[in-house]
Image (spheres, rainbow, N blue to C red):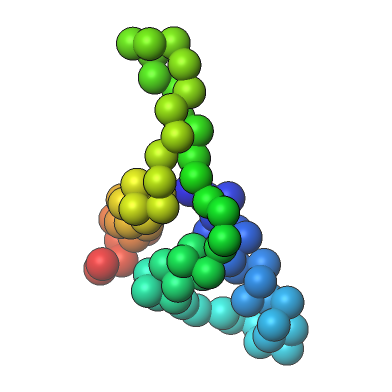
Length: 78
């Protein structure tokens, strides 16, 4: 999830090279994800010992949880 956030932040820096402090909210990140033509995550399932594909909604759910944890750990309201 951190890598997806990093990809979006890199795009923001590329588009706004003169801005030092970039900010975005989760809807901006979700729009970026929705703009990807082919996106899925392969997640290992120990019960069947195989990777299962997870869709865009699963990724968004995990991203939301990831960002909530980051905000909580840094003492920010979310």
